[in-house]
Image (tube, rainbow, N blue to C red; front, side, top):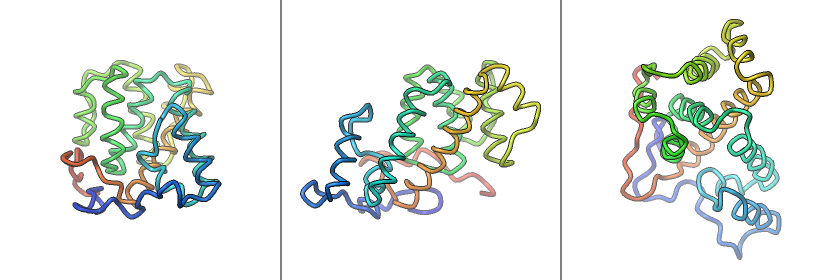
Length: 198
């Protein structure tokens, strides 16, 4: 996978799936916990993460909260995830979460603008707030007092922390996916073009 997140054409990625009979007891326990949970499989970063089963377990528990029980509503949460995927040109992350964002009710036009590296037009007040907060956080490594106060007034302190958490978690997911060279499904073209100057 290049820095733009394109998977190698023939590989399964740098971490081939571990056959169940070759898993350690710790790996098997984590794999079963993930497969029996809301995700239902080891797709995405989890096959690679199984190489460190304690980390994989902690990682999947954090991700389960941030994805399924966050204080941030689902469409806004998915918006935050798409912003992280775009910032890191994480092709698999974008592929997986674009569909989830559409199912949660995010406008395709908003997602398309983010994919192109543009600020979307026509966002709701909440969408604009999440966009501003997350984009500012990724690009400046903090948020201004004004952005922080807007987010706290709208989402409360738990919501602010959950928004930070989902942003950071999906940067970590993007790192795993990009380093592991997790391929897109066969026949799926990389959805994100490289951004100029990145």
